Length: 618
Image (tube, rainbow, N blue to C red; front, side):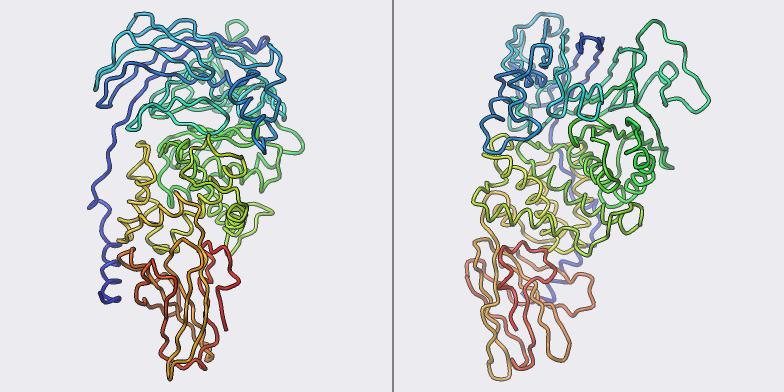
């Protein structure tokens, strides 16, 4: 096939309207939670009731269901405790701390009674999982009502959840309630909690929290009774109704989310910013001399970030988002994040942007981050570097500098992993990585490289279209790794299964070199060599002694096409395909070797070549 005609075909594909592609549809279970808890701040305990309408939208008949009881992880001898004490590199926030907890410091969730459509059910608690035998099977396309009452104790803050965090926040209430496990086309996902990732059912949450009237709460959802609460939820000048007794009931609703988080402290400062598009940004923090200026400046920065993110990554579908000081670092939840808040301004912006971007790749797209942690953490990290670089260019964050290539540190992390001897495939379940080192760099760094390197393979215009199409096609549908690569095939017109298979399912590395530049009469022969096991298309930049340059793209034959020219003033042409099985390739230049100054593979640094010492030759 002639290369220029192939480029024209690809260009025409990129111009096709999005609506010409069929939209993916995958059945989803659904849950409607109604929960009420009465919280005792003196004992750090609560009593709760839960009514759960569960919709079985699957084609399967269910004979059992499972709930997550995450707080049970914070007990000596739990799976999280044992796992942490046996890893070669345990998280410093966990270590052996769980093993030393006293009875009044542990966490627990105890289900006292559970019924299905009014009939009491048998259930067994196995660590952080409640196993439930149903009275009657749940038939396909039907619904049932589960009702329970339960008790909980909030553990000392160790990982994500808990009380009395290192910065003095009283309660970081994440994973605090019995949560129905997800059932999808791969079956039940009722994994014991060992401090890694989450996966949940789309649903609506109606939550009432009764707590000491002096406490301020921030979290998921929309507050339904601001006239009773006050605490920054009412317009300035309005006063709330007088509290009856020593407690207040906070009533929140969160539609179409897969979790619900809240945090509480009597000393929270609550500020908000309402954007022209109707979105309200809330900020909850413990004001002190170190952090007050940074938190006061944060709303303007995040307002700007939202505008950019909506344009590049897809429109945020809710009308509220809360940045809440709490937790043990940064952790994402629907419509909210818990972040430690005594930080420098660049650090505060960085953690805020990162956790916010999880709203796109985990809270709205909702991939199974236990199976595909890189599709959440990696894509979020990719977007974070882009957004921070944008904000730096807007001069909104003192100390944040714009970079020509914001991904250099991300690639360095991957190179560290690839050379360590400890790398495991990204397809490894998050819970089953042998070390935190291997998990963290695979999920975050290598996951982010997946996306930025894909730009190198298909071109920036196609990737930009793909980011939006991926979000709009798969929001609220739990995409898997094949779904994202199929979107990128659609926008590029290229076959990309090889890219996913090598980068995700193996630990093979990329290494290409310029082996020789030889004279061939009035022409030049450039010998290129594949050293690593992973094949890649190449951008080769030839610099001539007269100062001119050209970019020569060498596609792989298994791509069934080539990347169009990206926006550049440098002339661009496509060479003959490189058969992927061939270890060498001969590139011919129609000028004498004496006219060639240098040949370099990928000066853009987007290809994760593990040895760049052989990438150029003069």
